[in-house]
Image 1: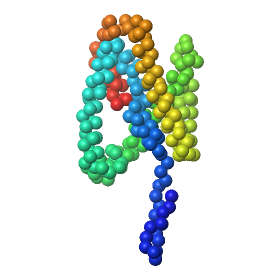
Image 2: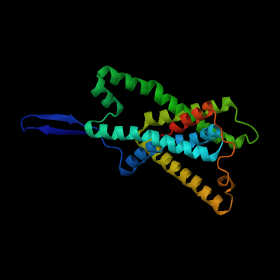
Image 3: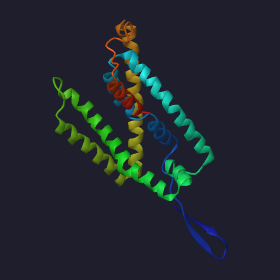
Image 4: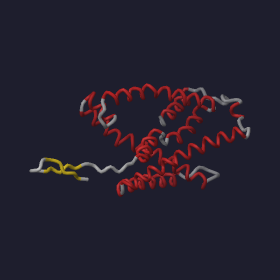
Length: 223
């Protein structure tokens, strides 16, 4: 979008970015970022690490308490440095351009690709599980489907911004629907009287250092 500003004698074109996200799309982006895919990935890992439902709930709570100070720090930084850019802006203002560059480089080359790989592989495993009821899905099939997901998302984002926004909205609604379904099924099972797990929540609890370390590591991922 181009606008014309200036005096009557000379007008200078000013180029501005076209707004392509509405209220719903913006809310879907923010809420979808807060409720990450880790909520669907971590429960199994935490349960395997703790061995019991009771300890797994405690691990979830402790991980949340650990993350609260970090959230408060970000809230304070957001009020002190109101510029856009997130981590890059905060680190750049505190330690200089070089540190800010390293933060962005790490995010682009290491953190984001690894996170996307985990999400794609997990989605592929969940989709392939019904096709292999008696065994785990083949690793080659999982990796091929995960690569297809990643390449498909890359193509959508490259070819069309509106299409990527619509896809973000669809995945947001799907994520919310999945959470409601899981919660609803849990409540339904309790109503049916299938709550034996609550009678002995700490049965088969694992107390080894390695298993608890893995449980906390997996538990911090969705936060």
